[in-house]
Amino acid sequence: MMYKTRHAWLFLTPTLLLLFTFSLLPAIMAFVLSFSTYNVFQPIDWIGFDNYLRAFNDAQFWNAMKNTFIYWLLVTPALIVLPIFIAILVNQALIGIKLFRLVYYFPVLVSVVVTAFLWQWMFQSDGIFNYVLSLFGVSPVKWLTSTSMVLPSLAIVTIWQGLGYYMLFYLAGLQSVSNDLYEAAELDGAGFMRKHLSITLPLLRPIIFFVAVMSTMSAFKEFTLMLTMTEGGPLRASTTVVYMVFEKAFTSLEMGYASAISFILFAVILILSILNRVLIEKED
Image (cartoon, rainbow, N blue to C red; front, top):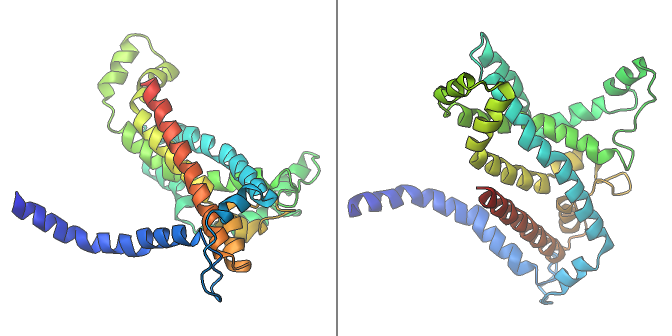
């Protein structure tokens, strides 16, 4: 046993070193810097909790937090529910079903930057979406230049690209469910919806929790779309917390303040994940 344990740690050591060097150590350093006014060019000046107090009194921070929560509410429920239906669809024993799986998964393979530029072109005033709307006599929609439409537009892009990714998790869960359960339900007179409500969803509950946590973390950390498609605009309507961290750290060079904001965001994500877990366990 000791021999196997020693060799296991030997194989894990390179990965643990990389994890410590590129994940844990930077996180520790950022936490330390959150108590300072470090700006790269000047020595570190320790100021205690002033950065955290500044964030709680900063209107820009609360605007960014509001935008982040709106974006999360638009994205996460859709990425929890819609992939279940797609997974059920591509789990059928049909001819060419592997092609359908590839089609749904293909957006995941496309770079986020390429996706952003593609959808930015489609969202233009003379883009394909407004052209289709004009065929029905609908006025052009200001997808990315309206303060009320910019976050839903970005959410559409995120959902489109994330459907196939989360579909795979549900598909793996579905393929572990015995067909005998569905056959027994059919003998009892259960229809399509009743079978999946009574069998599929309860058995997929651990995966649903996993997808909820993963999609929540992704939504709160989304940055690339805001940078490439809107640059936080219009009028900061798409400035999320992560985008604000980027601005403060690399535009204003307020590394300490940016670090404090990032740890407030970490605390929010942690609380949401714990609440999600508690709700799942309560239902169980």
